[in-house]
Structure formats: C-alpha cells, structure tokens
Image (cartoon, rainbow, N blue to C red; front, top):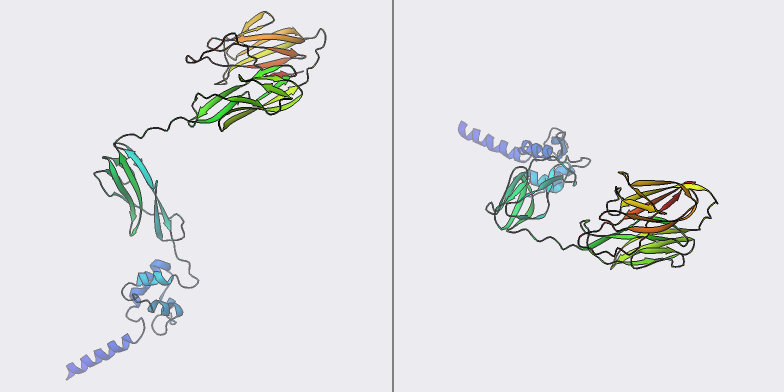
Length: 371
C-alpha cells in the first residue's frame, strides 16, 4: 500500500512540474543564452520571475514557440535573435579565403590567407585549419602555403568550428606564356623647354610597354599651336612666335606630351662677356655624361663626372655649339646669350640595332639666364 502511495505522489509531482513552463528545461537554456548573447543574462530574460519559472516574458514566449527549443535551444535562440536591448557579442560567422582562385605550376607554391569575420562583417580572431580536397594534386600546410604536385584542380578549405571558407587552386604542368609586350606609355623629353624665337629644340620620345620596358614604336609629332612653333617628324621643334605650345608624341591611342615656351630674342649688350655652362646628360637614364666633347666657337672642352663644362669670358650674342660623346648621337645648335647661361643638353644613346645618320644635325638645349 505504501508503495502505491509513493508512486502516486511521484506522478503528481511530475505532472505539477511539467505544468510550470521552463522549470525542468531552465538550466539547459541559460547556458546557450549566455554563450550567444552575453554572460550577464539569466533566467529573468525569459521569465517574469528573475529566478525563473512561472509566467514567461515576451522573449520567453517567442522562444517557447520555436518547435526545436527543447531539442536544440541554441538554434532556437539564434532564430529569434538577441533579447531586446542586448547587443550580441562578436561570433565567427564567415571565412573568406584569398585569392579566391589561383593557378600554380607543378612544383610551385601559393600562399592562401583567411579573413575571419563576425556577424557584422568585422574581423574577429579565430584559428583556422587548412585542407586540400585532393592531396595528390596539391597539399596545404598549417600556414596556408599550398604546394602543387600534379596537374588538376583542388578546393582549398579554411575551417574554424562549423564555419568554413573555400578557394580553388588549378595546377598546370607548364608556365603560361607571358603577355606580349604592348605600347602603354610615351614619355617626352625634355618635359619643358624654353626657346627663343628662331631657335630650335629637339624632343625625344621614350616608348614603353606595360612592364615599363622600352618597346619599338613609331611616333607622330604635333604642336598644338603651329603659329607659336612647328615640329617635324624627327622631333625637331622650330620656334616662330612668342607663346606656349604643347608638343605631343603619339602612337595609336597612346601619347605623351611636353611644353615648349617661345620667348623673344633679347638683344645682347655690346662688348659684354658672360659665362656659358653646358650640362650634358643621358636622355634615357638622365645621368651625367662624362668625357663628352663640347665645342663652341672652335674651342673644345671635355665634361667631367658631373657632365659639366664652362666657357668663361664669352661675348654676348649668338654662338654655335656641338656636343658629341662615344656611343651617343652628336647634337648641334645655336644659342643667343645676353647673360650668364646654363645649357642643358640631352644626348641620345646609339644602340647596336639602330642606324643613325651622322650628318643629321640636332639641336638640344634648355637655356636659363641667371642675370
């Protein structure tokens, strides 16, 4: 008889507990709740009574309506989101692997990186494990370094817990051919030049490919204002009137520009003497040219390490000069000086595969009056 009474009491107790929402499940719910939305949360999040049991809050009611709240409380809490006024702590939500695709030659390597992001798309610290879907094609170590072994395609995966990100590595047996060089840039030298009316200036064009290397290309020279000055097919500009014009070297859709400023001729003062300094530089490297021979009015001088020579006690007026150097095309021209003057001369290197007409006369120089 006592045994029957005891069983009855137990059944009544169980029935009573089941009738109180959340009493039995409470300890199993608080853990996932705090993990997802913060350790400060308690039973009072879902129950009106802070200690738990009894009437549910609106949030607790939403949770209880989730069909899986008893079997998978984490999924149910995630589905309804954070309680009102609560900002969820950052949780790893996404992994992005870079590069997304890579082509690697057999025997080569490629390092992949993993960006670990929280639910707001912000970086979060997380350790990832790297795997290759086919280790016969290639393997990847703990740092993300992939080593190609055989031709084929593999999926690279970075995993942290249940979150993962992927990329694709294609292994080829040979190195793909490099793109053919294409004219990409034209640089005109000098970038600016000042020429007196009646004077000339030779411009040069450096044609470069997509890698910045020289490439052979024919250019067409034009002056934006032929009243100010004209330029021929060799890049020789002739100053006609005071003003400024843009010099353009073009090849197809690629072009480069420079500016030519034409000034009035300043009449020299009778009997005055000045100093003329020549600065000789390589038109390609823009470095000084030493041992270049500069001739002016029959007087010859050789440049030193700085590429300079100076002619002192030169009378004002017009003077012709020639600059020549080993492995360079000679340059000739005329200058009109009224004060101390510096003439910048760019020598164009002669390459073995180029033909030059040594009788062609070029004028190269930029004058700067110091007085």
